[in-house]
Length: 110
Image 1 (cartoon, rainbow, N blue to C red):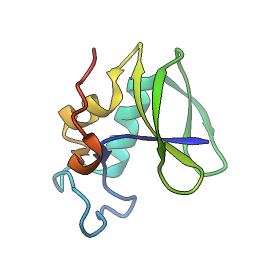
Image 2 (cartoon, one colour):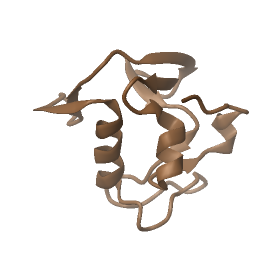
Image 3 (tube, rainbow, N blue to C red):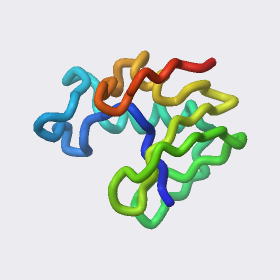
């Protein structure tokens, strides 16, 4: 399955946010969020998945699944040896907004 980082929301590819979902500032562009996340995880391989996601080569991450996140995705808290707690890093960068409904008391790990 595909992972969706738990507890956060970023802008859609068209720059919008879905009604009722938390939304980062207008300056937080989706492609900046994508590129920042790629850097937290590893190095781009130059390829893309069948869904258009950037393929990344990096160290093995530790992820804890919290269940389904729609479609074939699972929500997960992930820690990368390179970038630390990915959800926390995305919120701290301002490129994603904390989603209280799904954050549920998560404590950031380094």
